[in-house]
Length: 107
Image (cartoon, rainbow, N blue to C red; front, side, top):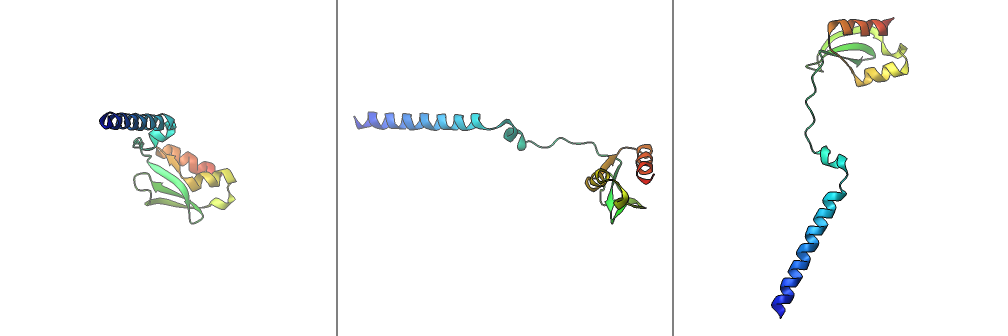
């Protein structure tokens, strides 16, 4: 008799554990599932334009710590939206795009 009760108890506890594990898996938000996935490889840009010491600077897209050009143009004279973009860094893919961006900021 005790063996049947023990088997029944083990079965009930096992079923409860399976149910709780399944419920926990179902209740996860979809975003939580992807948070552990490795980020996608993003193609790097040729340049990053951002603020440096109050001026507009051009950094290497491969080494974001390597300054290619430091302009004399102060960031403080730009509209707030442009200052925010420069604070974040603006990815630039080629020389023509870089020239146009710098011209826009300095005109």
